[in-house]
Length: 270
Image 1 (cartoon, rainbow, N blue to C red):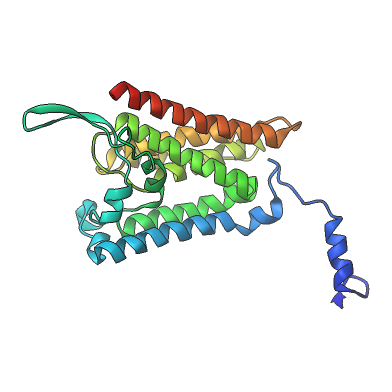
Image 2 (cartoon, rainbow, N blue to C red):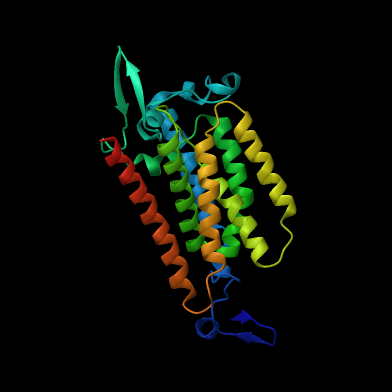
């Protein structure tokens, strides 16, 4: 028997009563119970940490340090070389000008893999702290599936910006997706009439750091920020009628748009 407010109930009665209760939803249509648990955020942190560990097992602990920021960032490893995102640009080698573009050469998987790789322990720690703080709030507001879709679209948008505007050097990190979450949280707060001024200040500070500190992917951060803002607006301002269909449809359209722009870019370079 299970204690209840009045007397006790049998387990079967409790289960039957739970089936008849409607699942509580958030202001944006997400599953409030699952969103409050933060399962997706925890999974994303776990995947990112696991990828760093795999990189260490492949390339050794030297991949954790010895890179930028006075050696605090990690050095290049076999895993980051395999999965990093690259921009496309004409480069000169041995007096010959040629187009550097690994994406059009068939390595489009880098759009996804680069989101889960990091340049060392410090890079991972900073991004995962930000993901943990902001991601859980956005997941609670949107529910797990809308949140995951927005996160991936924002990350892919950051990857697309890298592809369009960066040079032929490797870029890794979850920062593009996390910047998208910052923008999304701002949009969601404004949608429900909450004060978002402190968050706006935080976003501006991070943009200033992005623009002034060497070695940070400007394209990736700003691309994720813009993509996350557009995706969040589509989710937050979807009408009540057919809301889920409109929300997921809008995110799907954004995904297709990213793919189409990347293909157009690849064909134009071919």
